[in-house]
Amino acid sequence: MVGLELTVRRVRYISGTRADFGLMRRTLQAIRDHAALEVSVIATGMHLSPMHGDTVREIEAAGLAISARVPVALEPATGATMARGIGIMIGAFVDALEADRPDILLVLGDRGEMLAGALAAIHLNIPVAHVCGGERSGTVDEPVRHAISKLSHLHFTATEGARERLIRMGEAPEHVCVVGAPGLDGLDDRPLADRVLVAARHGLHPARPIALMVYHPVLQEAARAEADTMLLIDTLLAAGCQIVALAPNADAGSDGVLKALKQAVGQTDVQLRTHLPREDFLDVLAIADLMVGNSSSGITEAASFGTPVLNVGRRQNLRERNANTTDVEIEPNAIAAGVQDLLSRGRYPAGNVYSLPEGTAANRVAAHLAEVVIDNDLLMKVNRY
Image (cartoon, rainbow, N blue to C red; front, top):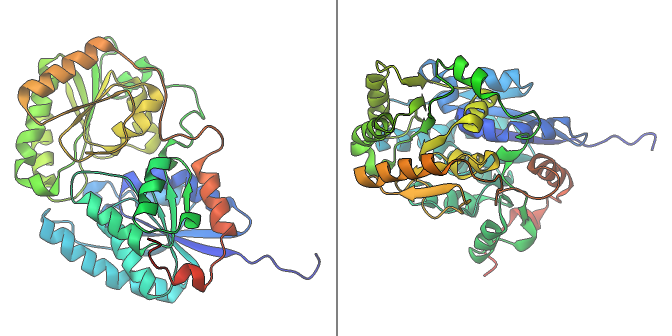
């Protein structure tokens, strides 16, 4: 009607790593393009580090505004540095959110920057929307993820099982929506990558086995990170694999992982990448004969390509699994047997428990953020059990 103005709801998203932004890019763009919504990103952590690729540029390249930049120390890569960083980010996020006063803060998963953002927002009476809560893992990630969920007012889960867990934790059923995994949006937008071209891009031979290795340190096992990384590299090389390895995140133990990777780079069959843009990463994942490590991409995205995954250790413990995932302890014989078994078996049929049959997570999240009623019943949350 003439004379009525559309009220635009302002959303802010916190991003600290290439990984979380890659998973959420489509969702953020869908929010940006929604007539009733506006979005910008508070960039922090690895995004602002030259050593980690200055990936804040990818946020800008995706056509998304940056409302604040919050630098935080990443070295030394210890649990103490991580904890101090959360404290620093809480204060900086309070300043950014108080100055900006968005209608909703959007966070993903289980990282410290998301916890800091949720703590800041709830004390400013800004509702928090949490993506991918209710999932399980066997490390510090699990209690951090559940802490974020308890601070959040709206929940967008990847699976029905995750929704049920949040409701059992006392979250209001009407505020827990199953949307699928945001990282699966757009995987089928273009033809599968050509193996010959992708191999050439990374200096590999297409006729030989290619392994994608993404191994992140586990806080409780940071002291063994270097040795565990070398074990994975040596086992893959012994099996005749060429390796495309990605640098780890900046958590406790990452110095050891990176040291082992850099030592291996001198070997002909090891290619180390500080960062791969999302599409390039997916190209390698799609053509790889095997993915090895403990990345959430092995649990979620890999299944959509049928790529066999050897998930090692406890970082992804208790996550819902697809058929393509094999779990092993970080033990030489178990890893060697797992690599040989998956290489001999070959690809799996594509299929993914994190995918919903119709539509995208991006559009589901955007529509709900535009339509949800923000009132005292939402903000004054209490446990429902």
